[in-house]
Image (cartoon, rainbow, N blue to C red):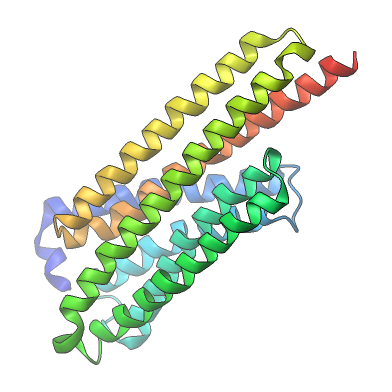
Length: 255
């Protein structure tokens, strides 16, 4: 792990990604607590938990990679737990905003899918990862790498599906309410904004898959929190824009 000290370019890249993650993570926490979101809601809890993963994982990885916290079952477990609160809540962030458009009966099946993938892929990833990098390194290295790539592909597919579903349902809803008011240009702007942001998010996920499948060990550990931080910040922007547009639509319809 201490080899990162001797690789200045990689160390600088890691520090840059960690800095971006921390900046966005702190900003998100401030914005979240200043927002009017319900503190007991799923969206608030998911964003908050994911933002803590954005803040904690880069620090933990830096401490271990630079030898400040020696590799041990405790340090490896802490890293994997920070990975869990970084990755798993992201799908619940995407799921929770679907309540704006989709009935609970349909949403239930989506929730089942998210919970199933969280249990089947994230829990084994944590358990096998901790064992592979501590007490059973010689036996579990290859299974750990295979499982890591599998969970990455699964969560990418799941998040992409949720994003595309959100775009579709938003488009259907805005078309349905368009005849009720005359701010069609605002609806068109929101849709363009939504589509462009989600295309950018998918591109970020693809780049993350490329880095991870290229076995760039030190880079991927810091790039992933950075990607999730950017995604989370963009998701927050999307929801705020959409809420503003929907509120304006309701006020226009009442008038």
